[in-house]
Image (cartoon, rainbow, N blue to C red; front, side):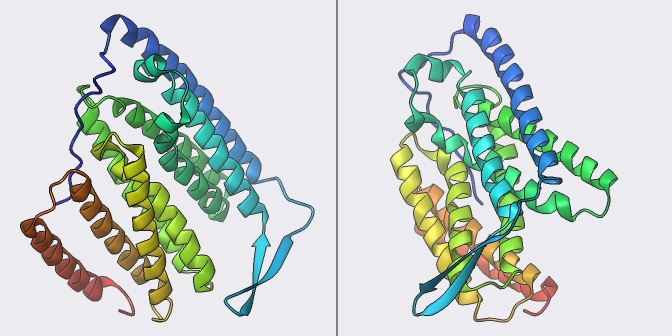
Length: 298
């Protein structure tokens, strides 16, 4: 159902075959540096321990709430920033961005997926049962970051032959990351103010990646991604009143995320029709029946 149609190539950028090979060679070198830096930082997070855990207490909506700043929280933030800056450096090797000069407004939409994958690695790898499996997790992380960067590079210019393949890879990684992060957040059963805010943030970031190729206007991408995030945050708030297991809650949030992102894509492409709405409604009904059958506690 959900498609990602390529945009027409920017009128301000005409690919030059003479520049493609040096740009790709420089890009591969930057990817290597980024992958090693991210994997090394993740490996270091397995051993680094802060001297103490910082806890912040405050009043929210008339009731007390505590925020715990743990080692994982700090390292997740650091890895997200490292992955984002590394992605910025790698994407800048593309000829399209060489031609327009330095502008964060043109490249910030590429940061979300590498940052999400790095945050996932910081959370999941320490939970693996042995050092051998943790090493395997680090190798998998490096591979996924590299694949993501190459896919991002191939989707900078919609006119390149590898655009559709790269877009498919990014979609699969984005939805998989969304489900994993929704599951991790929802199964903690923390207060709605916290879990809803986290889910809204994650949904907004990943929606930016999924909507990035539907229009050249980053402002429109951001505005629609924020709407997606708000809907997911409100949905988490509502689901918290329903005692569901983590898996079922994660599946429901993924379904809502998929539907809202799909509608946003059609809106941005001016393809939203009654037929599309009917198709989404039938898909939603089928998915709900499937979740009711396989999801525990539904």
